[in-house]
Image (cartoon, rainbow, N blue to C red; front, side, top):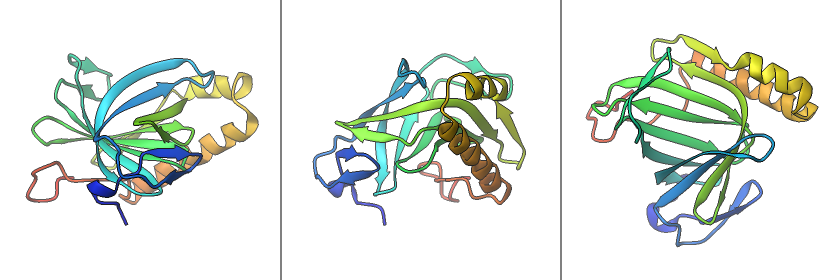
Length: 188
C-alpha cells in the first residue's frame, strides 16, 4: 500500500526506507555512470511512495530533442518509477497535452533515496516501449562492451535479467503506469 503524502519517508539505507514524516515534495534525481561519475541531474515531485518504490513526476525542461525513435519536447511529462530492489527504473512519457509517447526503461542498479535525492547508477542498456506493443532495445553494443571490460559478472547478469523482465512486462502490457494527471479516462 502506498503511503499518503503526510506519511512519506525520507532516508533509505540500503534497499528499505526508514520511516520519517518530513520528506520534501521536491526531489533531485542524480544519474551516475558505473564508475561513479555524475552524468545527469533533474528535479521532480514525489506523487507515490512505499517500501518498494518511489514515483515522481518531472517535466522535460529542455528544448525539443529528437532521438530518432521518440521526440521529447519542453513540457512533456515523465512519470518516473524508481525501485529500491529492482535493477531498472521506468519513465512513462506523455506529451504536454496527455498523449502517451511510451516508456523509457533504464537498466540500472537499484535506486536509493537519501536526503531528498534519488540516485541511481546507469548500466547503459535501455528499452523503449511503445504504446502499440512494439519496443526498441537501446545501447546494446555499449552494454556488451562494458560487460566484458567494466561491469562485474554479477552486475552484468542482474542487468540482463532486468532487461528480460522489462521485455516480458511490456509484452503482457504490465509496465508500470499511471494516468495522465486530470485524464478522465485513466490515461494510458
